[in-house]
Image (cartoon, rainbow, N blue to C red; front, side, top):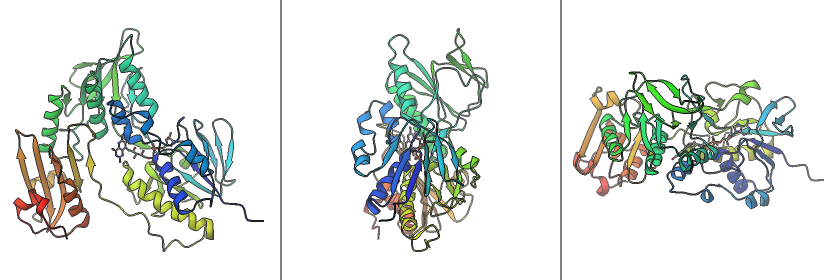
Length: 430
Ligand SMILES: Cc1cc2nc3c(=O)[nH]c(=O)nc-3n(C[C@H](O)[C@H](O)[C@H](O)COP(=O)(O)OP(=O)(O)OC[C@H]3O[C@@H](n4cnc5c(N)ncnc54)[C@H](O)[C@@H]3O)c2cc1C
């Protein structure tokens, strides 16, 4: 009798899990008995497309990562709309909300994140929504399209990438939108203040009011006390709204891991091979952290999926004590940021953590160079340390972004003149 296949249970069915299943299908087809369990009612879909969906620039047919036929053809058992509520790591058993139990030889946690919410008075009023899931996006669209009482005034809390994408989408659909942000300029974690000014002007030209250094006080209810009617600011100003999008960050979903006694810091602690502190249990995606690094973009998560597929295959073949030293672990990447808003081109790459000291040239070894054309709405600034480009920010024309991204990533010395650096298309990138 052939020995039974190892049972692989994947909990959470978002982008990380979807990608992991694809990697396993390529690397080790038919080697596992796989079950994947998701809380959302859909199989894994492309969450990134929720912003374009809201803007009317994508449709739901483009969302699924794989078809139902693909899962069937791979022999993968799919359970959706049924969250796992409990793990018994001794018995290696997961129990779902519907009461079904699933055992594993290897368990992967891919439970992602929840949208964070500001703990303001009135936060539970109807009309206050976070944009994290397809259900959230459908809820927002239904409120905009409501024939009786369509949403007309929106406030987006948070002027980071997701908040700005949502604000532009709402405004483009005829909802008068304001953004309140607790820093001095939009996308302040990715942009310097000057790029932020260009971006704020573009938002204003689209009719979006951007309120910087904002303090939110409380949400005010309408007459029947159920629905949001305004956001009151710290200075007393009332921003009337019938829709609020909360875009103030994410919190890793770690409850199952924590309750099961796994090492959890801000997220589930795993090593470069995605191993948690519990043997046979792995985690990847936004629910995990590796040496303190957390994740909010898909590029590193896709790298993790590739590593984990190789790790799981090794364990399937040689047991949980098998050596992994010949499998390259996950390595940190410098990730560029782009805004997905039609007609607004923003790019940022490199280590911009300490923008203020970089911009002021606080350190002798750090230099900065900028070029701007206010009339054309174009701006770029570069920072480098020693001879290596360290960071780049672009607004307007971002055609050269790939060149800067490559120079930053490869950390090669750049000795070209300032002019050539700001117009790098002709640079030899050996
Ligand atoms: C609107 C929006 C736009 C984005 N745009 C970009 C972009 O342009 N570029 C980019 O790189 N990234 C973008 N992201 C981020 C990207 O989508 C995430 O980094 C990625 O989805 C994380 O994948 P994940 O699988 O870790 O988490 P998720 O995709 O969130 O999947 C986790 C899944 O686990 C489920 N789950 C949680 N607990 C349980 C449980 N107990 N039982 C069963 N299931 C459970 C959740 O319901 C969810 O379906 C965007 C995100 C959003 C919301």
